[in-house]
Length: 165
Length: 246
Image 1 (cartoon, one colour):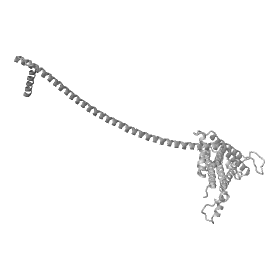
Image 2: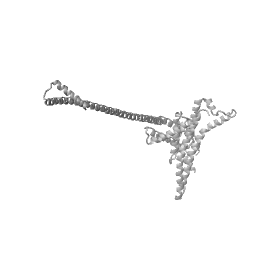
Image 3: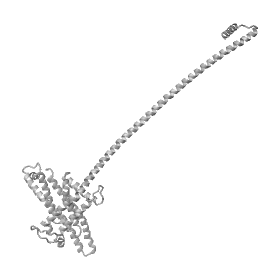
Image 4: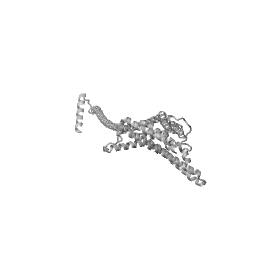
């Protein structure tokens, strides 16, 4: 048991050599790849987190932008519809007004034409009545009056009729 | 009882000539020291030879262990710039852990249950941290750091002597703690095993066997704890030597 308790140089040298051998081979072959991988993974995780964060922010920014665009588009569409309605109403009013004017004009024109026709018919009728009257009077009187007398008589008659009315 | 002591003691496996008066004959413990060395290397190397970003299988175990040593012992105790100390502390931790665990295999010897091994490693720690401390601060400043700032002048020499002695005792305490824990555990396991073998009554045999199983499980825990303590103390000593004066 004392051999356990009291250190001896030979075993200490072996223990020292063993330690440095393990230290050397682990440092050469085992630790560097593990440490490199741990650092790499740490960097990768950090990078992923940062990337995810920036992607999230970008997504939020885009969402805001799209929301704004949709709101703008909606407002614009509303404006266009409103404007269309106004234009439509103005056009309707114009058309109605124009139609009314045209109708009024047509009516006036028709009235004028009717008056003209009426006047023309009246003139023709007056002529016929005069002729008939002359021939009838001639037959009654038995004598023929000359043309100028006829005319004068008729005129007088007509004026009498006109004033009698 | 003698039989157990005999069992735990190192025995020469070969008789080699003395070198400068030092007996270099390898013992059973020397053999298991180098077996522990080989196993330590293989265990770490097998996990580290094909590193993948997404770890699988044994790589997970090796990475977890090394990351624990690197983060929880080296960086937390010595400081974030202490990456250079990682191989040293990790080698200590792994070598001690594997030696302790191999000693629990029936028939195997624990390389750390003789003071020759633990004293050698404690001395390596002692020399390493003092060397680095002196190299970093200079001899005078290093010794001056033994006395904390603000200590009255008349107290300074006493503090220095106390601190000096405490430094000298460090390798001693490191070596004895590990040796004593490993030896005591094996002694208890040996005693209960012997007890089990000597009890003639079959039904009663279960008691010491159950005790051996429980102690063996406890020893697994002690093996890891002792490796951790050795590594942590080494890191604390290094930290004290290279850190700012306190």
